Amino acid sequence: MNKRAIGYTEEQYSRFLELARKRNSRYEEKNKVKLREKKKLFARKERKTPNGVTNAIYNDQVSHRKRSHKALPGYTRNQFRAWCFEQKIFWDLYKCWVLSGYKREMKPSVDRIDRFSGYSFCNIQLMTCFENCYIKGSEEKRRKVVLIGDDVVEFDSLTSVAKHLNTSTGHVCDTLKGIYKTCKGFKMEYADARKSGILPKEGQM
Image (cartoon, rainbow, N blue to C red):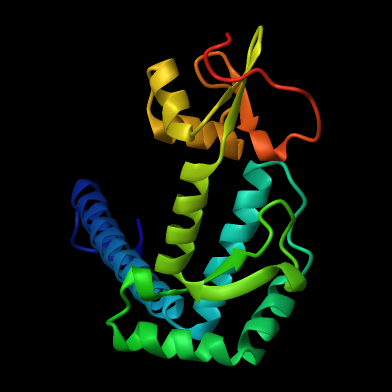
């Protein structure tokens, strides 16, 4: 028996070690929780910095292109950050976002000038999230959609496709983005994105 156990029975000493291990385990767990909370707090603060904003935008661009199975941005993360920091409008947008109390709609964002081309410095422009969402939303609603099944049918809008298939516009939108391969068994794409082909109009199915 260990010399520290003098005066203890074997059972008492085992119990003592067990209690000591539990105390150490609780102490380590508390430290882990505190460390996780500190990391989360640091991450939240980091996302509000200029570096954090550019990182978030770049990550969204890469994620969007991967989901759509298209070419990644034609620049690296560091190149994109340097480009943003050189633009006066970025700092104006960032300052307004901070003064707004970090409202999401005021956050700096990047939109493609030509939606059919990829992300490159000659095809992107800075704006607020609100402006970006408004532009995209308006364009998406006006764009015609082609439904591909046994026949190929053109619909006037995303909403009309959703009504025809008795599904949500979100499901149709996600299919057009490439998140889903089909919607209700149909493939689909935007009419203006098709390279060729004469399409029948809606109702000629």
